Amino acid sequence: MPPPVELFPANPSLPERATANLKGRRRKDFDGNLMKCELLELVQYECEVENPNDRRAMARCWPIVRLFRRCRDREGPFTVETTAWEGERSKE
Amino acid sequence: MSTFPIHPLRLLSYTTRIYLTLHLIYTHLYTQALTHGASMLPTFSVYGDSALISRYYRRGRDIHVGDMVTFDSVVKPGEKVIKRVLGMPGDYVLRDTPRRDGGCGGMMMQVPQGHCWVVGDNMPYSRDSRHFGPMPLALIKGKVLSKFQSWYDPRWVEDGLKPPELD
Image (cartoon, rainbow over all chains, first blue to last red; front, side):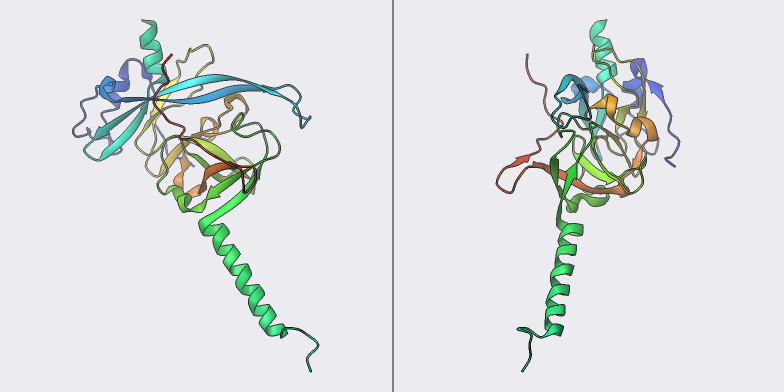
């Protein structure tokens, strides 16, 4: 069984949440400004296979770009997925 | 005069040594696995691809966000699966699935100590952390180094997490 985790919405609380480390304490040397962290992306997909039983069947895929910020605190780098946070901010 | 070109005990000794050497290579260095299923499309086809896996990374050693890892399926016992790591301990990830139209919403969480967050590349066809939650790093059996078609033509897997491409 995985340990219980706390869920929260990306907006507006992600920057404040990201300042907490694994022990729930405030990260040192990180002020919560995600925009200062390195922006990275990871592409995943939504694919459809026309006939899954046919070994030669073609698959059609549509990319789904996920955004991440690689930040640093005193203990080293950590990543924060900002797909929801930045995606929703860009619509504002 | 013996009828064997080599003494049976010596033959047994050689066979055992070869078996143990191969066993060490497969469990601690490298192994190759056939892949099937639609959960890692388009990185791996539904049928007929195979993956070159490094065992150095077993139990999550030196694994980073964006890597593809193999582990024992928590849905089908005895079956091995390949998924992509989206979060390591202390990282923040989206628990839900982003949509194709760019919409998202959904809830976020912090990956707990000793765990990672894994998602298949073809999200609608994958059963992963979105269903069974954070996965223990200790279950990781290795990292996928290449889509392995032949010894002469390995397609090395690129870093999954990279700077955004400019439009």
